[in-house]
Image (cartoon, rainbow, N blue to C red):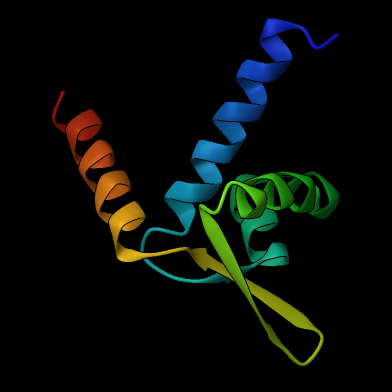
Length: 87
C-alpha cells in the first residue's frame, strides 16, 4: 500500500514534468536534468502521464521526445501556472 506522502510526491513530480513541457518538447535526459532527477524516475512518471493521455512521444533516431498531448492541456496548465504566479 502506497503512503499518502509518496503519492503526493509523485503527483508533484508529474506536475513539474507537465510544467516543463508547457513551452516545448523535451527528451527524458532534458527533463531529468531540469528537475535534477534520475532518467529512470522521469521515465517512470512519463509512462504514467502517457497512459493518462496527458503527454505524447515522438521518436527521432534513438531519442524519444515528449510533449503535451494537445493545446487544451497546454492551455489549462498555462492558466494554472499563471494563477499560481499571480497569487
